[in-house]
Length: 233
Length: 160
Image (tube, rainbow over all chains, first blue to last red):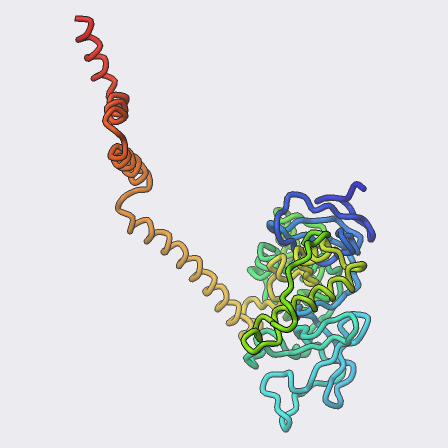
């Protein structure tokens, strides 16, 4: 059978031919080993990243938890030992009340229903509910934790989120030169944004969503235009 | 790992029971167990499956594959804490890059003999060491090949 190779569009069940690799192969999301071959499990474009890394670049919106990823969630239940957090996956995630900075049995963290959390997935398996933590292994919060009031949470495709978080992404730098804001990007396709005014918030949110279809060299021009709109009206 | 295995010589049971054969006995038992296990599952697990299973590593997250950043940013002092972390990371990255460049520079400076010179020198050295392992005729031939002028003179002399 003739399999798909790099750059092809694949649909679930397609046989994937991994060409030009010797030794170990890393199969990213969207690819699975079944029996003796490799099959696609998602719709998208087969991509090769690095020397021997293959994955399917899909434009899905449903989040499937993966261990170690940082996600944005909304607290739905803040009682008991385990808080429930909605992270957009099929099952709600849980987070222990001890998994916050400076939290002890006596000193419970201040978390209310409706708060937005930025946490890292500690457990993400097919058969269990995902578990979040808001501290690193040293007990420091770093970038994680409960986000302050006054933010704006919106959703976008997982593809866009990955595009925003790439090290070479020019958008945030370009916006950051002109405006003051705080932006949190969760790998579950949620973006949280806080700026000084409603106008600016909408503007930055628009810029982020428009970035989906922009090429890197178009970004500066698009940002300049948005800033011009803001200052002229 | 061939499908047909030659029957191996087996030590008699009475010998294995002896005190000094303890280690061999354990090894023998382990080998037999492995064989039994392999026979039991041979209908389901092929050798190819085992080798292919070691070849593929499945990684469910794209973060390590694409080197994605941690997704919290602040600009113009909106969240001082986050900006401090961003700055610290930036400077750490710059330092690492600087260190790498410095190390490269230092390595070049430490080398007072360039690679090309070294290669030339070693080539001539290998030739002169090689000469020592030749007999007289080979040596003279090798030398005359190096210096064709000498040979030409010799030929001229003969003609005279």
